[in-house]
Image (cartoon, rainbow, N blue to C red; front, side):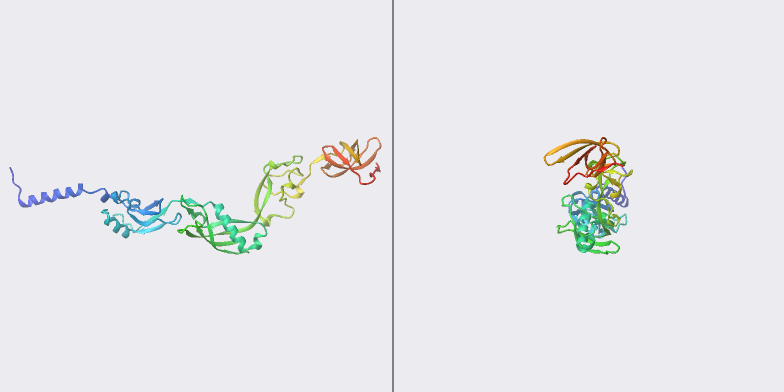
Length: 329
């Protein structure tokens, strides 16, 4: 049996110790730091930062940022907390800070628009008097978020509005009532607008417009002339004078009441005299819509009278005095 010298024995012991150290590395000591982290709760833990923090996973290192507002944690701070809690980590990646973000729910643009419209209407009542305030964002609005358990809300703390250009800058708080609310700067443009009824599909002369044929669009008030129809009562029951395209504002001159009586057609006429009612027929001398006064001629007497159109080829005479007649020329 060969005996080892002292130096050989010492070398063997060192080799055994090295192997023992190599194979006794704990799971926590093999942890890797993540350069970018996204959390869902109110705190940032070592388990969020390291891919395997072992028993130290629940150790809190910082408060979580607000959704939409990432923050950074220095690697030196992380290293100190990690080593105090048994994570023998080495910064082999050369990291200096870790970016931490928090997941959340984007705030619906309608909520932001409504809050800003109210604030601008209060700031510029003369603009609000011209119509509804329409808001278009240019920056900042896409970062507004709340956590899953928060009520989606927003408060406008400051707003600066230029009435000439329509541009605004605002500071908003999200969510409105939270103690940990985040403040954001947003900008955009606002202008008065009106809701205008438009047709949903192409319609031609003779087509009667119904409520089902109508939709609404919001357009700048500056594009709405006095001739533009803004009330469905001026559309429903009417017919186009020309072919009308969908989605476009309709002018008063574009429509007319439907023709219930056409020139040359036979019209049934009812005479109402006190408690007596008489009926006759005549030929229309002109077209007529509901409620219009037209002339008809009696084929036998060849006399003309004025009647009020009440329906399709229907008319009535309700004289307040003698019935006006004239000879047909």
